[in-house]
Length: 165
Image (tube, rainbow, N blue to C red; front, side, top):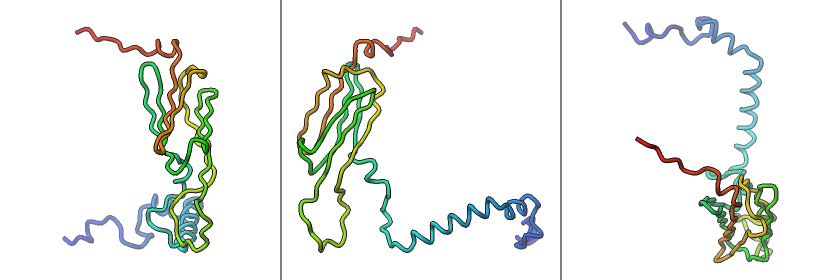
């Protein structure tokens, strides 16, 4: 018995089961394949590095959020900025970090740069009741730390329950 005898159909679609013929003739599947091919062809011509991520600047600055019993702490890495380049807002359960990173020079001979320049805004849902008048922020060595004290009501929510065995 050869390997070909184990395959239920050959290479021609006339021998394939009807379910596969129906999929191949579906106009939506054909459109989907053509659109994918079109995008692949368009972006192939840009010679982009393999590590290129189009939405990398959309999530800048990188943040870390930690929650304690009494406060939330948001830490953002903003290298190359000063505190005067940043604005912070807390409204309706959302922390907004806004600012602008300016280029150090107008170097017209620059051929390639992975550095991000320009205005940015990052909104972070904090999802907790915070005492807005007690929110504090510090900035040191390109790291912004925002401390958001929770309200008494928020602190009393979600207590750990002991399990009796």
